[in-house]
Structures are given as structure tokens and as C-alpha cells.
Length: 93
Image (cartoon, rainbow, N blue to C red; front, top):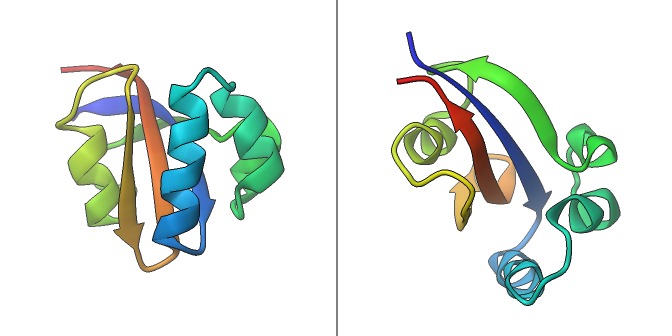
């Protein structure tokens, strides 16, 4: 079964998500923004979710993590929890 390592930032609105993505693309550190803005407890760890298997996360999250490019900020991704920015840092094929 595939595994991945990823980090994310969870916010309430798509607008907030897009604004944070622009800041990251302009050079601000993903981890710093996660610590400051993420509503998820993982924000304290810079958004780091550690390693997880396919199927452990909600489907919208899994779809991005196990399909899209590594080391790129993806999103906004809408789930039942809010809007996420995702960065996949590692994936086993």
C-alpha cells in the first residue's frame, strides 16, 4: 500500500487559503505560515502530518497526496474540515 509524508495548512475560507498560498509562492516559509494560521493541531509542527497510508485521510486529501507532484504547494483543497494547502514531501510508489 502506498504511503506518503505531507504537511498542510487548514483555514476556514478559500480566500484565506489563496492568500496564504500567494505568500508561500512569494517566498515565505510554509512551516511559519502553518504555525501562525493553521486551525489543525499539526500547525504547531509546521503543518507536518508525518507518514500515513492511502485511505487514512479524507478522500479529497488522498486524491491530491497520492496523485499530484511532490514538493509543490497544492490547493485550495476543500474538505469537510475547511480549505487546505498541501505539500507532499515524500511518497512510496
